[in-house]
Each structure stands twice: as C-alpha cells, then as structure tokens.
Image (tube, rainbow, N blue to C red; front, side):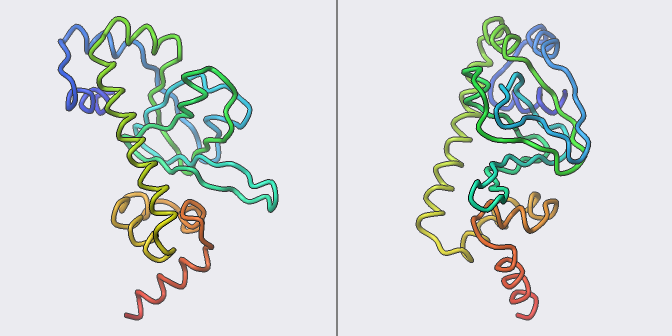
Amino acid sequence: METLIKSILQHVPLTPEEIALCKSFWTEKTLEKGDFLLRNGEICRHDSYIISGVLKAFCINEENGNEEILFLAIDHWWATDISSFSKQKPSIYNIQAVEKTKLLQISHQSFQKMLKEIPALEKYFRIILEGYLGTLEKRVVFNHMHKAEQKYYDFLDTYPDISSRVPQYLIASYLGVSAEFISRIRKKNKSS
C-alpha cells in the first residue's frame, strides 16, 4: 500500500486523514503465474495496481489463434481494462499473470466513493490516465512510422525492466514482429 500512497503523494497532497481513508478502500490480491485477472467477456469489476509481478493483456487472433499482446505491466503500474471498468461493460481482452503477482484492488463502487470522499484523487487519476494515453499515442506513431528493429530498440530503452523479466516472444507479439526476428537482432548485437 505504501508504494501506491507514495505515487499518489508525488502528484497530489493528501492529509493524514485522507491517506488513512484512501487505504481503507483497497484490498490485496495475489495471482499465481498463469492466473487470469480478467477474461474476455467478463466485466472488469476492479482497478488493479501492481505491487510486484508481471501481467500481460492480450486478445486472441481469430485467424491464427495467437496471442496479440496489448500491454505488459510490472511493479508499480496499473493493469485494468479502463473501458470495461469505467462503463461496467464486458472486456474485449484478457489480463493474465506472467509471474506471481501481488495487487492492490479497488471495486468500481468503492472507486467512485473514494473519488467523492477524497476529491484530490480525481487529479491523481487524471494524471495517470494522461500518461497512459500519451504512451498509447506514442505506440501508434511508432508502429506506423518505424521499422521493426527501431521499435525493438525503443522498447528496450523505454522499458528496460520489462525486457529483463518478460519472455522475448511476448515482447515480439507486443511489437508486432516474430520471435525469430527478435532472436536475429539479439544475435546480431552479441556478435557486434
């Protein structure tokens, strides 16, 4: 809980009373490797903050049956289907643990109550959403403007912690390239 509070306090001030109240809305959950946080078609009932671990969000490509990675999330990141959570409508993707993962979760109802009782948190979550939107925009631009090799190097520079904890085939799927392509780039770099 302390890492979440620390993150909040980096963006908005809270009184000790507001911090205590904020803490009361969250519960801990642990996922084992392979457990699902959310499945396609389910309603996302909780917003989830990762204390430790790795999650992947993905859809299944109907043509070839492969996982298409939408995002990867590690310690101190959020992992939620924002649209499903905010509208309480069925999700269009899955979120699954890549390794044992500890989460802080808040239900949709509690989230709304928390924002009403601690108005400063509206600003915090707006800042988080703005950062997420900026990341999505960058990804769209990079996918359209850069070659696969450049996308891979940018991923390594931007997310060094993810690249050291996630299997290469998941990174390949996230980047829209084959695992063999990444393997060739890595071999080329080792021989350089």
